Image: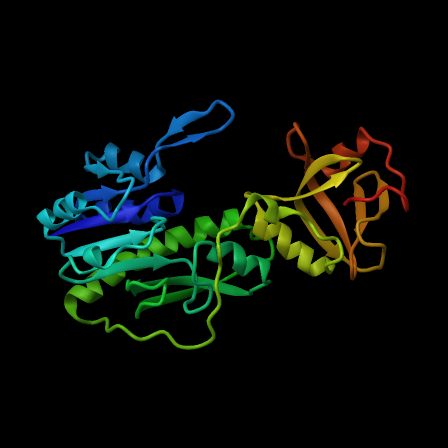
Length: 307
């Protein structure tokens, strides 16, 4: 029987590819409308759309999903499953009731922790040591459906949102195939979510502003969680600077104060401990190591301050 796949960003691409490689009959891909991106304001297709078209799979991009004509198109397929991976919208009851074996979602957290749109970023922001993938049945509420399968991975010390996205997207694709097989064979039984619940709301560009009063460890996690978007940022003499890579070190200092600026070393005070900034990006320039940043500037230790 046929499947319908709902998904939009790069995170969803490995799951769609896994379905195609497994020989599943993906009859239709539903994704968000094309968007204007970049300085050139170029209309760009979602990554999921590009993969689907490369495999001659029909793609629809409804501006509204609560639409009777759209429902009719989905019902005509008579889907065995509807698979949802980072689609970006909550599906209405009319769609949830269509497939033979329910709608299945691939979510990048160990539910019920980090329900919402940005689970990977918030896991890093909160200094979690592990995260994972959950496949679940979809209901009308946000990420509250019964769990089908769950796998966890360790969060490495050098992980950023970018690297964790890549690892979890691949894991999600593998677990999706295992989930479909188990549901068909009756070997996987849905289990209600239990345990501590929290939420991971979407990030906004202004959320990347650094508060130097936080501890060095908190800021280390903050920079990792915000990379590559919206990116942690601050100001130095009214110049906006993205902070890309940091490391907490021992010692005390005034929050935001440049405590050491010499050679390859750029130490900044925080609310507790110090940060060494290893990589940063001045406004209008490429990312660079601290040594390159310092080579073109004369910063005054104990006086110049990031704000």
